[in-house]
Image (cartoon, rainbow, N blue to C red; front, side):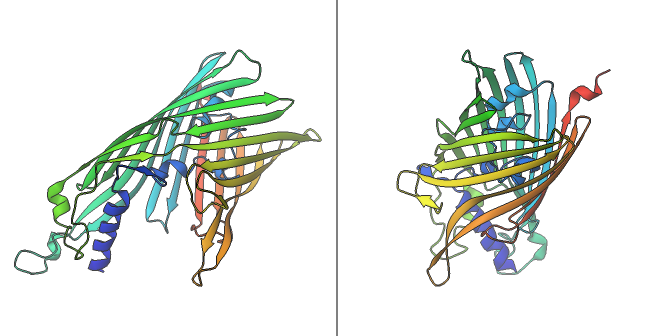
Amino acid sequence: MLNKNLYFLLFLICASSPAQTVRKYSNEFMNIGVDAAALGMANAMTASTNDVNSGYWNPAGLIHLEDHQMSLMHANYFANIAKYDYIAYANTIDDESAWGISLIRFGVDDILNTTELIDSQGNIDYNRISLFSTADYGITFSYARKLQVPGFQYGINAKIIRRVIGDFASSWGFGFDAGLQFEKNDWQFGLMLRDITTTYNVWSIDEAEYKKISDAIPGQNQELPESTEITAPKAQLGLSKKFIVRYDYSILAAANINMQFAKTNDIISTDFVSIDPALGFEFGYTDLVFLRAGVGNFQNIQQIDNTEKVGFQPNIGLGFKYKGIQIDYALTNLGNQSAALYSNIFSVKVDLGLFRN
């Protein structure tokens, strides 16, 4: 058990340790997604997003706000080991522009620190065990504005990243996103460029704390990791359309093409770009009750016998909206079709104009 905790600590240090190169998987907590309604549709939101959560999916969508809104979300991951929380606020500036701010936290709390379990005499002292937390924070400031060309709007994000691994290491990062939406004949198109300038993280490592684990595994962790890492840009193209059926019923269909400019396990992968499609649907009744479904995260998964199969992540969701208060639920990875674990996700969205006198 003690070795397990120590190995987990080493894993956290190594997995989060920066290198002075562009990383395929850097600041990945910022790619999980927000809002149970969106997650129920497999994150296919680039074109259709139009509320407070647009600051995450495509800041251009903030232009559709009519009043100020607030959103909250909580989810547990990895069999409830990790906690994921999100809060956002957005408001209009005038008829042509809007702004928003959001905070994401992804963390594992109360990890056993056994680096001082054995004293200098070789004695085991359980009183020397302490607890620490590792957490990632992302603060996003968003701005959206209509363009002079009818149907077009754009948005930009400025992001501040803070990552903490107990007393062992911490980092600050900064980056930008840019988004565009276009509407014509009830069709919606969207483009989201994440980390468009690359997001740059600078790490500070406590050498005294790091030295305590440098010899925990012979030959491992002998040198301090480098102090910087760079998050490569990503692009997302989206298309959506809402169909009205006999006045009371609606169907929103949305699709995304998610691109990373590196070779990954995505279903379409080259040395230049890797592509992962996503498809989502929302069935609504009188803008009161919603049923959602989506499929995405198509990956080539290597099996034990070295063969490959295509894994995918099916999601479903429910929503209820009444007088400006919307409560949503999503169940991700229905049927364990992908390598990811399933998660239950809840979110609340509130039109704060309801509380005005």
